[in-house]
Each structure stands twice: as structure tokens, then as C-alpha cells.
Amino acid sequence: MKTMMGKVERGFTLIELLVVIAVIAILMGILLPSLRLAREKVRIVVCGNNQRQLLVGLASYATDNDDKLPPSTNKLGTIDAAKANYHHPMELNFHYSNGWGARNPAQDREYAYTGRYLASYLPEVDVFNCKVAPIDPKSPWPPPGSTYDPVGTYGELYKTGAWTPLHSTYMLLWNYQGYNPDISPAVFKSSGYATFIGPKKGSSPVKLVVQDALMFKTDTFVLFPGASTSNSWYSSHQFKGARRVKDYPFYNTPRYARSEVPEVWLNAGYLDGHVSRFNSRDAYRVGANAHDAMITKVLR
Image 1 (cartoon, rainbow, N blue to C red):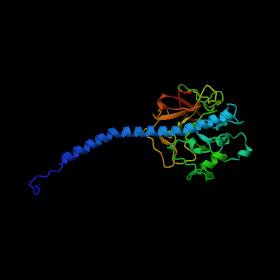
Image 2 (image 1 turned 90 degrees about the vertical axis):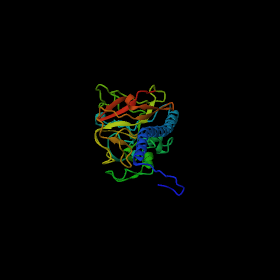
Image 3 (image 1 turned 45 degrees about the horizontal axis):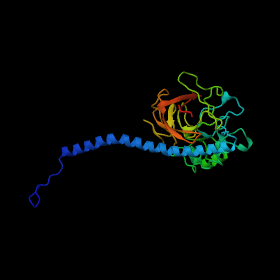
Image 4 (image 1 turned 120 degrees about the horizontal axis):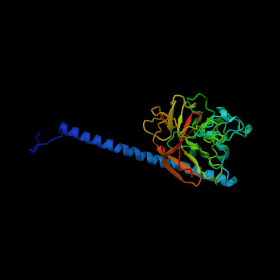
């Protein structure tokens, strides 16, 4: 096509346009995985900030209580240990009778919900959840769509302990004995499984007290019907092939067999206040009562 000045204007040919599109597609294929990895690293850092606040609260509690750490939420109390569902350390509230529903903490001093001991040190419940998980302190709990009607907000029930369970996306490991074969009879003793005994004091040799969760469950979450999948690994951090239903706090997928541990970076927090990253492929596998979990090999 000629202009008034006699010059020829030339546009892109179809082949040239296709070549440009192909180059862009190749570059996107190269860059997107790097961008996803960078975004996940940022999420890990942000998530670790909550753990640091939690560690300060634990240290303050120990200072005021003769070096002792709070009781584990998942405690056995005085009941038969063999009948207790004691192997799911991701609960802010959990009753030792393995019961679900309303509680009256004033009438049950054995009930060691987290807020009973830590609410005065950690008044904001946000610190018990990774920031990438959609759990809001003002959300009604139990959550809409579950098999129970809401009885309060997530933040309120943390402080009052009036309902169990109350989920956390962190594994709360201080005073936790669910993977201790001397206490818990359902600990797996098969080859390849480790044991873990949570620290009871600030001066305990083991310093690991909290970490992001990566667990395998053989049943679904009671409070999130349809959101979780039986026989699945789940974590608040995304791993290959995992998806998260809206408002559900965990990514999960049925693609992984129990023996196939998904690869994901997780945070671990220690009593001296530091938080470090570890890879799930370089961790201990612990398990009991149909639940497996991955725990960092660095315990102090």
C-alpha cells in the first residue's frame, strides 16, 4: 500500500505474527514457574511473621509460669488414652473426650483450650494461622455449610473455649504427646516413622513448638463437608496438584498416595524466637490414629 508521499507501508505478515506469539508463549512458560516460586517465598515469609508473634507470647507465658509451657490442647485428661483422638495437633480448641460441640470450661478444668492459657498474652487469634489461609477472626463458627449452626465468632471462641473443635493451620507442638509412643498407644511403630515429644518447658532440649502443617488424613473435616477429600495430604501452603475450595483453610488433593509426600516449603518456629524454612522432602514422618504428619528434622 502506497501513501501520498509514495512510500510503501508494510504490516506484519501472518507468519511473523505467529512467530511473535510463539516467542511470547515460550517466555511465559519460562517465567511463570519462577514467578509462582517467588510468590510462594513471599507467602512463607509473611506466614512466618505470625509464628514469631506466637513465639513471643509463649516465651512470656513461660517467664510468668516458672519456665513451664501451656498444656497441649490435645491432652488426654483422665480418660482412657486408647479412646482419645489425640493425633491432630492443629486445634486451638479440642476436648479430650473426642467430642464435638458446645463446652462449659468453667465446669471442666481438664479442658485445656489454647485461649485459657494464652489469650492474655496473645489476644489476637490471627497469630495461630498462616496469613494465606482464609480464616477470619470475625467469621461465624462453626462455619456456614457445616453440620452445626454457628455459636459465635472464631475470635470469641478462641477466648472462651465454648465450642470444639476450633481449627488452626499451624501444628501446635508445645507439651504435645500425640507422637510419643510411651503416652499414646496408637503411634505408628512401622519402619520409616519417627516419634516426637513436645517440649514442656522453655529450658527443654527440644525447642520446636510450632510449624506449618502438612498432614495426611484418611477422613474428611467434619466442619467443612465437601471441601476436603478422604485419603489426602493437606497444607495451608500450595503444593503441586493441590486446590483449595473457597473459604477452606487448606490445600489438598487426592492425587497423592499416603506414601507420596508432596514437596512444599514450610515454616518451623522455636522457643528462642527464630523461624526457619524446611522442605517436606527433608523431614521426619510421624503418625498415629490414621493421621500422618511431616515434622522438621531440626528440633532445636
